[in-house]
Image: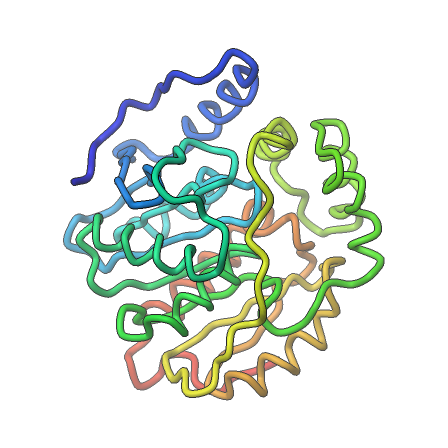
Length: 300
């Protein structure tokens, strides 16, 4: 049973700053956005829902620590044609609440997403994820290809190549002892030189969420052999997280049918907030293309 929730929610005193920043981001979503709480065996998942109830469901999975509010800039354009369902990931900062089983393994994540889609009454969906959310999205498409109509992966991590060693070294202080100050410094360093800056209000929410969630689930690269559905891979041109050209080459080998392109001037951490217009254009072209024309074989 899906419960519609008020935009306000009771939270511990120590996270009141995060709550205020979360609410400020949520206020930027279009009028008509509904807040849904979906029970699963892994707790209650918060979903920001917008768009026609009879539209094709478009599930949006954020990067680690980003919360589902990060899709505010895409919500209006995508919600005009699709039923947007933007998720706060379990075990991450946001308003998805733990309960029941803990999410510890990739199998837990796919089982959670199965239960979430069941709870939403969504038998078949378009699935789009950024960074860690893209890894979850690809793993789910491999797990349940019959439930995914089209798959969009935005600067995906853990899918086609590893992290740059330098990035891991720079991120280590934040990983070992996450604090808002370290998160702000990490974002400032990793977005320097990007053509479009990450949204300042979202950066503050990300920083205030540092340390509020658990560590992301870690797993192997999904085995995409036999995956035949339409796929769009959009890479951040100035991503410091991984070697974009290596990701593109490996993605082309793993998914020959995929469309692979770059978001000009974007860094890993300016997706999706800093390149909304280009991202909307590419996503809608991919999602709305006729079935026989949807992202088969176009590449960098």
